[in-house]
Image 1 (cartoon, rainbow, N blue to C red):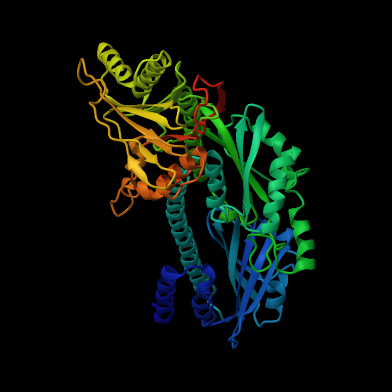
Image 2: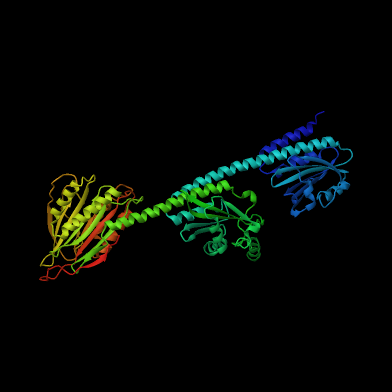
Length: 617
């Protein structure tokens, strides 16, 4: 005959199991129906970790609404023999035959009416096992009781398996989201140390309580970043990362090993992580729940410290390592597969940053060779220059400038811009600057110098065009200087007068490298003492704000506001203002500024002794 009461209870139990987030949530739906079984006076369940560590015991007597719950973590060595195999085991044992050394349920059973204990032991997972039993008297149908216990255990095991599976799926989803976010965060920086710091920050506390990151240098591991959920322990981690010989030796031993290694217990003897629990307990006793509290411990629980070390390898070479510090239950430790994936992504981001840094140094070095390292200076003029790289990918730009003393005592200023970027633009930049410099040093006038450069570009079949402007400053007997300007399609220079007015030098002329046999006309005007000539490339004027306006529209006003300043301040100020102004535009900015200081009337106008000052780049 079917027991409808038990069938209904079992149905409710399965429904509760499908919704439960913890097995303990099934207790009421399991204990009450079993206790309603004829002849049953006590229901008791236990949860064990490993063979002999009792985690808790829960018991409910007939006629009582309040269960007795014993939470513990004590060792019961004699209970190890009760550990089940893969299949549940149902046993009937006389209460009088229970030994307290292996049966913590015995005391409760002896205080409850009943002559026997019917118990089902079963395995929940690899970390431990459990039991569910009832105390029965002689009136109980033991066969029916055994069947109900087996059915209840089936539900508990299925519920636990489902919770684990859902937890794994949620963990995988969280891991995937974390890896995706980590990639975005790390890839958004091309600075090596900032990338490494982001690796550490992303991982804590999602992956571990603490993290240390080292970069591999030729002389060995170099500490770069550390973080921890506790500020106090973060400082300790930083000291460990910089100075601890145990960790340094561990990282050196790891070498190029690609597998993530986990270390705990005796493996941490002699390490700075070995006594974390004791040190934390002492700190807690002194400081309560402040910074000294063990990170990752909830509700006062203490967990053994575990560390993992993952090698950061990208494109066949080791770039560093990341060490995680865990102070959490074993179930919450990340998998080796997840750590390998995180390490691979971090390594690629770090390697990209390293390659970018190498490229940046190479580009800057090449750029330095394309620009003069020094500018001439005499008492008659104040010269300065500024150069700002605009391309975030750091291809070599085509902007160039120079200042050339001439045999007649004048000085020639030149500035130009090759179309495009990269190696070909750099080659043309070098050709243009050195050709113009050589011609102007020999006393060639600006127009002829530009024409001969155009001819050279045509003969070389240059595939790119360039713009340039050449201006000479020749001292006059009355203390002024004759400014002679010749342009080949380049933005017109500006003159800042000593009274604060700004004027544009009239120029014209065809681009260089487009047509054969092009001639260039010169424009002449006088400048007085403290007048300043400003030559620039279009990266300055074409810096554009978010609303679409160009810096060119406000350049005269900004230049006028710099009246009275020396050439170095004017060059640097205009560059920084344009850089701050632009919301778009990636062109390089080059400026060459010359302030005419003047000479007393009747002074010797022969060439002055020259000094050289280093240019600002």
